[in-house]
Length: 181
Image 1 (cartoon, one colour):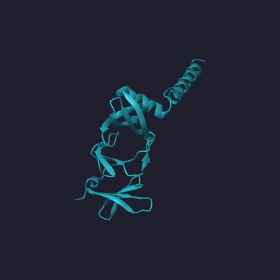
Image 2: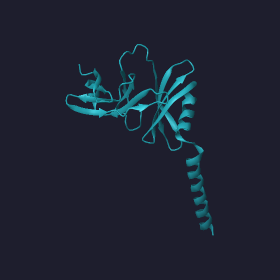
Image 3: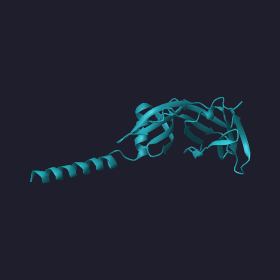
Image 4: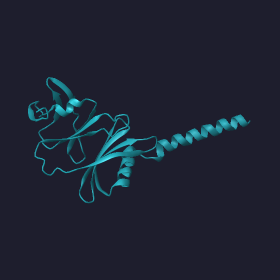
């Protein structure tokens, strides 16, 4: 009799835990928005991009007008801030802008990360090239505001001494940012 009660109790506990895990936290983007608001006084969340189900980057504006990006990682029950940065487009006159930093995600401490921002409407794709090798083709993503960006993480240090080649819809080169010089 006691054994049956223990088994029934264990089953109920498992069902309660699974229910909490699935339903109590809400959807990912709502959880991420709550985490952002815990750290910043936000006016607009421009875009939340969930990467690999447990990593995210969010773009938002604070009440003082500062444009921010926050990198988050999902734990068992919630999203947690890993790192955040501010950004100003003032003084940028190139069609693409590159931000380099160490990857903020767990088990990627040795990785380099690049956030690509695209300011020219004509650009539809960007690749990283070193000599004759293609290191990476950025997946160009759009924020809810229409602004476009790409994110890449790698252990390859060649990204610091490479060409960033931007193409239009016809496949023609629109711009090259030569970090190799």
